[in-house]
Length: 140
Image (cartoon, rainbow, N blue to C red; front, side, top):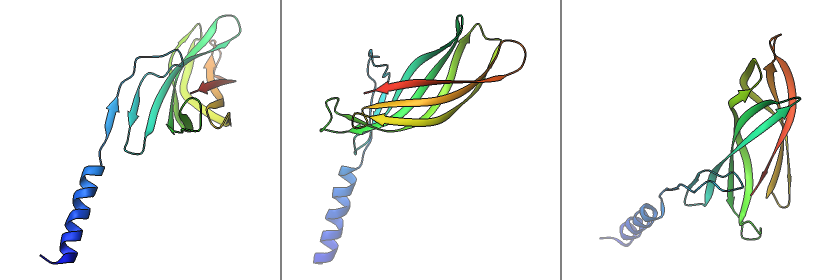
């Protein structure tokens, strides 16, 4: 076997052993992280349940899905890389709530260990949908 062929085969074997995906389910913590998926690059998909309140008892339950990666320089060990989606999972007292949530802006702080997400949702008390603005904070 030629030297080039041998090197090519060894590189392929090394690549095969270095590629893989690991899935981890974590117990829900007080931070709201309910699950995480890890790749060989230590990237995580995390979820946080939160409740937005308005006025006298009106509420919208949401699920924020976001991504983070390992960051040894941070005290939490994580660095928020982005927000994938915000989904309405329930509501109380409203007549109707639209399933669409619009992300207006995201402000990161503390070396991206904290993200404040400004958002808009639409809800109705019975006379048509109106827009309401709120925010949710993620801290890793």
